[in-house]
Length: 485
Image (cartoon, rainbow, N blue to C red):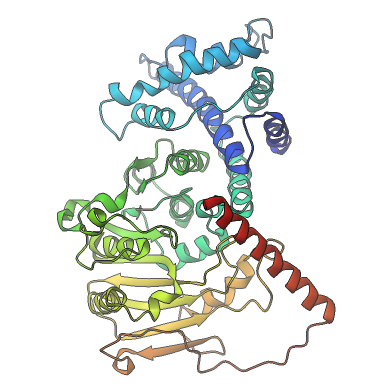
């Protein structure tokens, strides 16, 4: 139903000189979607208040509400084209009145957990990139067709928005940092299995894919009572995000999945000294794909962690271990070199992980699982509070070259999800007892003893296709490097 509207929005954005990339398209779509959501949310709250004979105060002043500035309506609910600003008048209103007004909410809000604060945070961090008020008018009319508050509409809207995030990941450059393959997220959430009554945390939230999937997983796990649903909405899912665009996308993604006021905070998790984490700060479940590669953190940030390292993911892992409750569970994506690096930080961190937590499973992912990222990764599954005795490994091998045309899918992970229930050995899975691990290096290298070498039966055309795919990935990596220089 809404696919045509999203297509019209993208077509319009591509015509505007101020929007040049998939990241721009998603950013600009996000703030407009957010304001339409606020309108629908406020109208729904007004109806509820009237039914209960209560008064209702709108979040925004009247002149800044959607039905006044964005898409004015007649008494019969149809669009009043004569009242709608357009061209330079529309751009002037958005840039000099609307955005400053929305930005001011950050200062006037009671606290950071309110929807008002999130409005101010979002519009303090992004800007209107439209250079044509006529194109902006077209986008506003397309977004006006979307309705947010029914579960059926939310499912379609969330799917379409996920596609936009996926397109950012496929676009190369730094778009991939916002996208973790959804089949992988679903599998990690299924293994960790958060339940109602637990809190779920992601300190590197990105587009909030883990929190969105955790929300769906808990919501569909049983028929929730009214109290349990309210708990899921407001006291279950927590996240932090450093970057402004990712914060906006994460907020919008959670809203479209049905979380009315996401508990996301705009901050750098690594700026917090983990010594200061108290029991009240801890969570039952951690789900995350922290940044890997790129620039290292500053020395003053590294001082927040007992194990000194410049590797961002290693700092996040220390943070996650510390912030878990005793008995808490974690699923985290990390570079596979963590398992074998011989530097002091890697060895010390592996030792801490194995002594303080039960590392019960390692999922070894194939190259190309993360589009645009030329590194191999693993998923660590562990429980805090008891030492590791036995580690079950699974080496994922879909039997094909992974890339844009052959992304990771749910079928690829089905055997893993089945075998992990019993830690069964197979051609792709095996177990390692902690007694067999070198206590000086704590090396956890993936070394499959059951793998049977197969004859390459690919046709010449299949080999050529794989070479072309690898050439494309190499070209994108080189282009990204050049843009950074």
